[in-house]
Image (tube, rainbow, N blue to C red):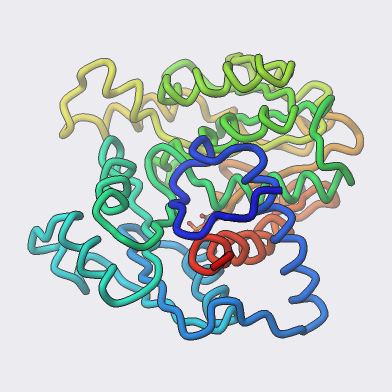
Length: 338
Ligand code: CP
């Protein structure tokens, strides 16, 4: 187990070795037990985390702030309008200044083509660790909590032989980032999972993430495939993870002007109203299959209530594991071995 992780940025899981990720999972389990027993675990006493949210959040904001409180520190809940970012302050200056005041910076910036670059720019200039709370490329705090949840539900650290289906779903409310499916396909094959990625052709992912998924699968002997049929993807799955994402990558590749993307994206979306996780479709998966979703779910569009509220759903266990895993990440990178 590699334990010297103090000062390391948590931006994409691909930046961490498998051994380092295993340390995060082990520490998460330890802190989950401490939390269950009501035992103190003030590992970041008097430390400060600056949380910068460019978008809304329920789980990420509250799990991270609660984590800092329970670890004995404090989190500042910041948005661009509370800072000089809205007046054009650069990521370099923000990173350098916050480094003089505290011990960690955590950022959510999901703008397509911008978010990951912004976080990496802050990290390059900051003298304190930077944690990605979701960007356009990865949502590592979500995927590590999802991995922990699968390990718990199947009572195994290795996902070898498990078929995990990550499927696009219809959801008309807004175009979600690509980072959740990308985070899953780049992490789960490293732990041996056979991943099937299913989406209508306009909803492709960023090619670099697919290449990473293919490379990791090859290294571990796992199977990775992309198909465009939701029923086929569900067949015999141990884990189904159906969720919506936007067609940002496809629209960018087609050189659709920025101002037309929303309207054209909605036209593509409306072609696939039958990509829904129904109770009927769940019957295609294995009897013991679990249903996962990072939340917020668009109930009635992405998924039927009978599924998300049904016995196969583990969505609230996933949400809970966001607390334990972010505590582990923050403790390791902001505290850790002296
Ligand atoms: N799953 C997740 O990141 O939820 P929030 O957008 O509410 O943080």
